[in-house]
Image (cartoon, rainbow, N blue to C red):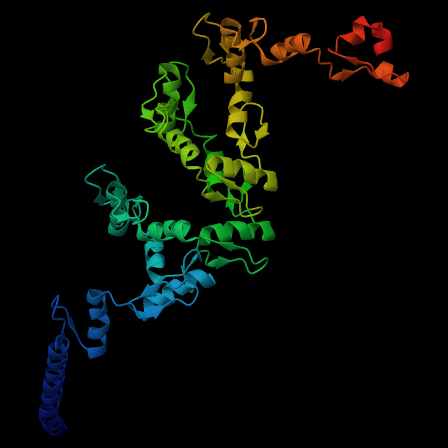
Length: 428
């Protein structure tokens, strides 16, 4: 038995050796073949001629695969397919741990890092502002904020991302490729279409994880959440802010600093955004359009304020009494009731006011800007000035209700006739 088995082994050995040699030869051939199709521009090797051709489209900037919805072009078919999932809202890649779905496999892989032990590591650091990121792609994307390499060839406005430039160009071309399938309304941006569709669905996907309040837009949620976190305090009046730039803007109220100057009329502003908004007065530009009623606005804040008329949304909540407001300015004015803050001070007599309008009205006492052209008498308030002018013109725009009820319609110059021409009892 031993002799037979040894003989069999000897017979099998040449066959085994030949199989191993054949495997080695085949793997060597495949390894060599992998670099047979080489790009003449960058030297990258490919195993198949078709892969090389596809790669060379990158160098030639050739993009034969075009999206039939928005006309965006791609050099590879797989990139087109990934892009089209955005239109279809298709998310075939699901996380096996928490079930969250994604349109692209790369997004799933990035998401899965949350579940790993190294999720908190941020090895990629920006050498300009020292901000750190978990992925090199996020760092590259962030660094464009500092450079803004994509410039509009019409108005020279610069953007950190190519997609932002493409979106911006539609303002000039008035192109609206994104159409609501319910009402047929068209939009320049896909994000605008999604926001609009929530009007039909009444969807509020953005929920505060502290109080559970829901919002139709992520920006409204972010504004709401700042109620809970205000770490930056003004060293003059102790008012707290959620962001450093808001604190800096606020401090200019105390210093009256206005570093941003209009190059057309020399008007100065404490905020750069206010200057940009002001300059639209000269250009009459109103680029922001309401997606419900088509009314246009020169300022984003005015558009947002206007849209709350349609939604009846009140995202600004007083953290003391819980009262809600549609406008942030209304909330700020309301909060002065609790704080008794009076930041607007008259530079002549030192009297302080809680609202800028009240200060302007008060300052008229010192200046009396309304002067009668007939007798040169000056007035602090417009309505008193108008009442005075009726003495010269003998204008009597008001009719007594008691005289009217008696069949008379004698005009009177002022409303105090009710107490002087009749008894106060009869006037009531």
